[in-house]
Length: 75
Image 1 (cartoon, rainbow, N blue to C red):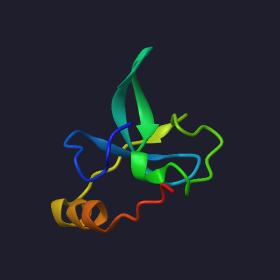
Image 2: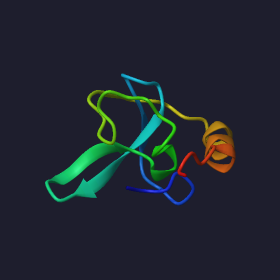
Image 3: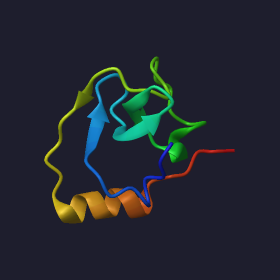
């Protein structure tokens, strides 16, 4: 899993829960996944994977604010 604060690639939104997600390597190849900060705080039926990532056209300032202020829910 990737950290939202360190990820530099395309970011989409999970259609099931509305949280940001990223394309990340797994043992089965690249798959859309939730970020590591969402580990204990996102209630998504597909977690940690993302079933249907929705494409977003992020404004640079918006994405920067989300990335800097995103709450880390890992315990």
